[in-house]
Image 1 (cartoon, helix red, strand yellow):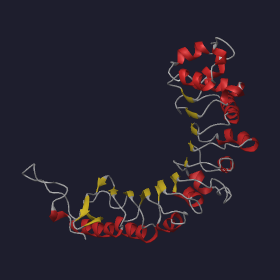
Image 2 (image 1 turned 180 degrees about the horizontal axis):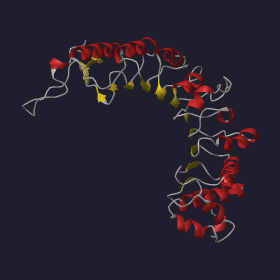
Image 3 (image 1 turned 45 degrees about the vertical axis):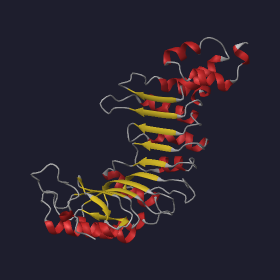
Image 4 (image 1 turned 90 degrees about the vertical axis):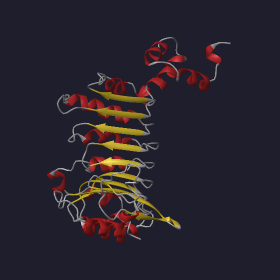
Length: 330
């Protein structure tokens, strides 16, 4: 039987087990096997200076038929090893050509969000599920998000600058990214992204203010995962969280208030009391301290949270986390 008569699915399955060098050689054999090899070889592209493969951008920019094979694309350009402006023009063309992407990560100069502009004005990315970038949330990013109807995970504006905070936010249509489930970025951008969308996982960089929390609660589904940095005192902050996002399952808080002060026994009791009010919470971390908990006796649906500092025991067999005297919050 001729290789030309074999099903494409069978050829693809065989090609999956070949090394990159073997795929490159296979691509040069005949017109039938060339697209099979390229489809596997370019399915996942990761480009960086340390990998010494930044030149792949030129291939993706000049050969759209190859770029359409890319499903996952990652590029990282170190600020200590910058590239020429012309390279970013080629990156913009490559993004335009990669219309079948499911994952896109752009860790490049934060000022070149314009690389998204041409693609945003000409094509859609119907299969894109994950998008991470080092850009602030500006007009170019907003227009790109308009073209990603299936997006589930978004990371943008993770390192907000003074210029970002002072510039007016871009308009994002309520119908954009209608399926978004996870957001990572600044609290300023979260205020624009979360309301009206089914975001259940939120990780915020930069200070989260008390007035910001009600906006997070305007997700169309309960927020169950939250990581945030705040300069508010932990106890009032947790009380506000419980008021607006009571269905949290995983919570991680970094509070810069009183960061150099050792927590008191009263502080532990206050935190434990508030944590008990989160009936679905199963894990909590405060400023790097993991808060121990266990299922409540006679009611496995509720948890008892650590309400006193851990003590050094003389007997290793003693349970350090679940000694009954430190779980006083019911």
